[in-house]
Length: 207
Image 1 (tube, rainbow, N blue to C red):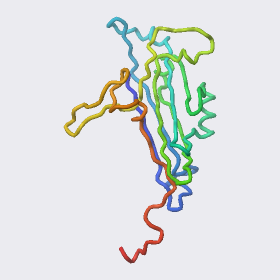
Image 2 (image 1 turned 180 degrees about the horizontal axis):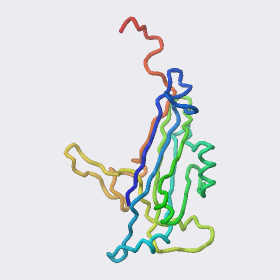
Image 3 (image 1 turned 60 degrees about the vertical axis):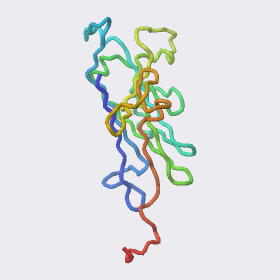
């Protein structure tokens, strides 16, 4: 398949109360979009016909985590919209959605919006991890087991690791090649803060 993930942060105004050219947003707001397309699967080296493939279900998972002392949560409005579409809150900061491949092929775009609440140092980082699961059976409530698909998570972000010569120096963890350490450590991380640029007591005539 083709997977695209877009992260969007916002430039704050001078007083930090809003964002440039924005309404109702703050510098601590993070928007994210995921898009899934061109979904194809193979069995014994042969492509599964689209009419058969569309019956299978896949799962999209989004996890958010702020650094110690900070939060990184979906905004209430977006969370309400997601739940209305069938998203479930599996655990704190982990949201799951499972549907047929036909539905993903018909509408593969998903929108998320998060708000990061900095702690006392007024700075925080927010790590967002969108992943695709072939199955979410471990979270099923009906007790049925579908062993058709592998349960390995597919990260929807670039996990390559290259040196200054362009050589891949990563290592394989599970089925994913990363720079080393747990794969989630290299998920995209954004910084949100309430700091102003420059020193407040700086004399502009000294420039």
